[in-house]
Image 1 (spheres, rainbow, N blue to C red):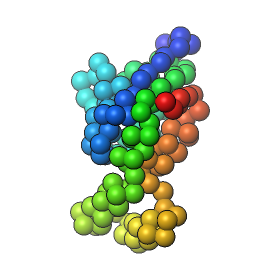
Image 2: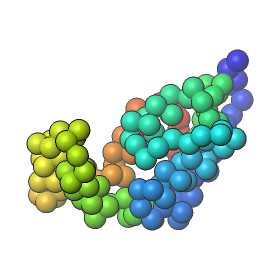
Image 3: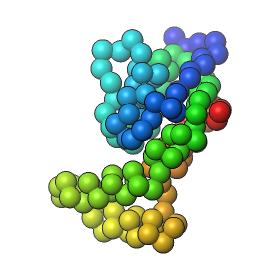
Image 4: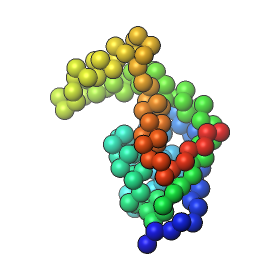
Length: 134
C-alpha cells in the first residue's frame, strides 16, 4: 500500500568522513528496521532510492534534510574520489579500466566529478525525493 503521508528523513553530514561512513549513514537513515543493509555501491544507492524497501517502501514522496552537507561534500571530495578510482584499478579486472583512467585524468584536469557530485546526481534522478541542503 502506498501512502501520501509526508516522510521526512535527516542525514547527518557530520557523520560522513569517507565512503564507508557515507553508506553507514545512508543505511542508518534509509534502512532503519531492515535486517540487511545496502552495500558500498552507487548502483545499490540508486536502486534503494526507487523505494521498494527500507523506509521509502510504501511512500510516494520523501524529503531528505541533509545536515552539514558541506562536511559530507568535503569528505567525499577529490582525495576520496581519487582513492576510490585507484582502488578500482588495483582491485580486479571487472571494472572498465580505460573509463576509470579517463575519470582520473579528468580529476587531474580539474574537470572530473567527485564522489559527492555523483551521489547528488543519483538523488537528482529520483524526483520523488526532495533533498534540502543544510
